[in-house]
Each structure stands twice: as C-alpha cells, then as structure tokens.
Image (tube, rainbow, N blue to C red; front, side, top):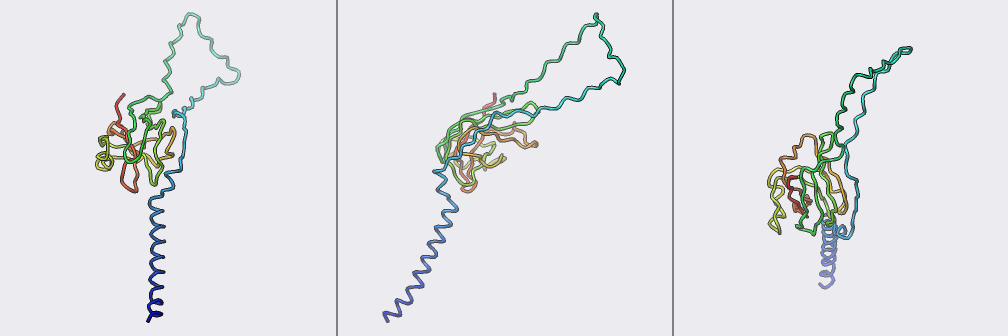
Length: 202
C-alpha cells in the first residue's frame, strides 16, 4: 500500500509544480516587476513647426532688363514675420498617484497650427502598458484620483516614451485641445494613474 500511495503522489506533486511554474510565468508577464528598476530616459528638444518652403520667384526672360524702381516711389512696408516658436496654451505640474511622479506638462500650439503635449522633467516609475492620456477628468490627490481618468472623455497620445526626461506627444489633427483639462500617465493594464497634472490655461 505504501508503494501505491507513493506512486499516486508523484503525479500530484508534478502537477502542482507545473501549475506553480505557469502561474509564476503569467505573473511575471502581467506585472513585469523588473521594470521598476529599469529607467528609460528620453530627451527631446522643444518642438517647432516645419518651415514652409517659399514659392519660387518668377525670373525675367533672357535678354530682358529688370525694371529699375523709381527713386521717388516709396517702398511698401514689410509685413512682420510670424513667430516660429511654439506658444503655450496651458500647463501644470504632475502629482503622484499610484507611483511617485514629478515634472510638468505644457500644451503647445506650433506656428503651423498643430498641437503638441510636452512633458518636462518627468520622473516616474517604469511599468507595463504606460500611456500619455489627455482627459477631461478632474485631478484629485490620493487614491481617490487613481482611477478617474477613464470615466469621461480621453484620448491616448501614445505609449510613454520613457519614465524620465523631456518628451513631445503630438495631438491628432481632429482633437480639439480646448475640450480637455488634464493629463495622466496611465497604466492601461491595471487601469490606474501613475501621476497626473491639471491643465491651467495660460
């Protein structure tokens, strides 16, 4: 009887070991805890609009002399050139939610009319499925603010490029930035905010 029990016990133990290994693998894939010790720094320059090429000037046919302006004719005043740098529409400081987070955000309008969300001095934890969200949710301190950002209107600007540094996230052309009031570093896997900032209009 002792040998029979021992023989029956071996498959049970082997099954438990296999289940434990599978569970550990799934847990590692799902939580990816090693990312908490892996920093990814991304440093991007302040965005600028692409310059529009000036239309070519018509050249005089060969042999034709260029007209000489009359010395008495006043020259037309040149129009002031539009500033090429980005204009800040709104901004705010990041607060910590599920993970300690600091830095600031700026909503920029470029000279060509496009919009970019810029993270500056970002410092947060790394993690799985982190995205930058533009939302209309209020920014709340503490646990009450961890999970509010998918309750209303939001748009994902893409995966977080790095958990540290200065980064630019262009807004899609069909997104009106006036309809959004906050930014969240959002963990899509666990539906939780790592950190967020309220956008205060400039």
